[in-house]
Each structure stands twice: as C-alpha cells, then as structure tokens.
Image (cartoon, rainbow, N blue to C red; front, side, top):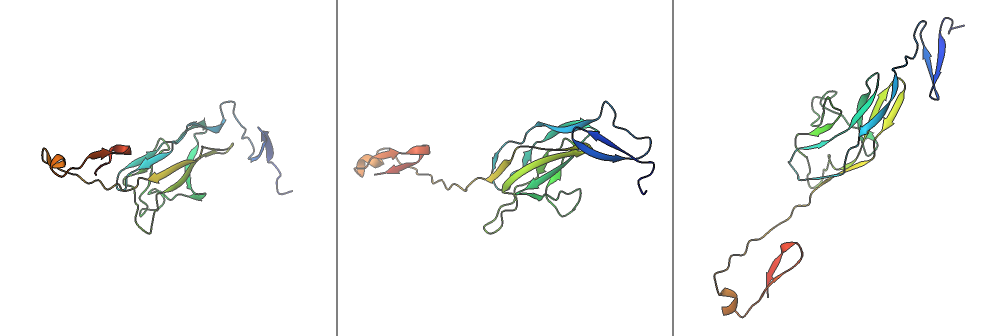
Length: 162
C-alpha cells in the first residue's frame, strides 16, 4: 500500500528501492579501490599522505576510518587537522604526536561508497618514528692512541670508544 508506484531493483546481490522511472544504468558500477594506502612511518611534525583512489559510477564518496572509527576531516570539522583531498587521499599537514596523546598513530582504512555498495581498502598502519638521539664525538688525531683505547662501530653506525 505505501510502496505503490515504486519498484525494487535487484543488482549484484543488493536490493535497492527506486522511485518510479529510475533504473540502474549499464554504466553504473560498484566502487572498487584501485590505489591502496601503504603502511607509513613518519616523523613527528612532518606532513604525510595516505593515498586511496577508487573507481565506480556514480563516482564514489571516500571516507577514512582509524582503528574502526570514522576520521573527521577539515571538510566536516574546521578544527580537524586532517584533510580529505579530491583524489581520496588523507593528508596530514603535520603529524601530531605527544607523550600522552598520539592522535595520528593507528590503523587506517579507506572506504569508497556509492548507491550500489561499498569497497574497503587494505588496513594501512601509520606509525610515528621513534626519536633517535645521536651524539657526535669529535676526536683529535691520535687521541685514542694516547688514551690506549680502540674505536668500535656497532649496528646502525653507532660507535663507542673502548
């Protein structure tokens, strides 16, 4: 009774209500992810981009999720520091990372949606690089010989005087 004049379209396993006169066209296609986001290791304060590109018709809308929760971008929340680029990529002008708060670190997933369905990307981890403290040792020629010491080099180019 309430659905009089409406028909139901069944396509690719999805049931979609449609209005009178509308139909799924031959050019309409479910979204599919064609560029997957990679895992990233980024330094605090540096910019980062998680790419994601999807195809489909009508053109899919892109949403990002971090650890399963939807990511707010500057488009929806002017206070958000992440930007959704026209390509679908998630852009961080600078990675935020503190002692107690790590708002950018996590596992990200890109989801592309149109009226025919949704497609999700692979999970991509974004990690903030650990702070490496490097010390510079300046030695005068012959200093180690005078002190009867040897200079030893370990993994990663780390040296010590013994």
